[in-house]
Image (tube, helix red, strand yellow):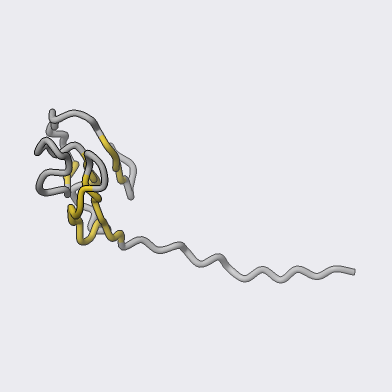
Length: 84
């Protein structure tokens, strides 16, 4: 079983994409100057925090992969500290 809130991102430098159970790959289109999809964003299939993945301008031999994530930092409870 995979952990919750899993995200794997990066330049994988391979055109081989192995299909893994319970995972979804979000990048559509080429992200490399040679027309390959090397830059990937992967998360659990049943999670919905990955939003608006777009491949934009080439800045080197790779394109910018812009993603929005719907993640929130949990609010810490207030803690009263008193000193003498």
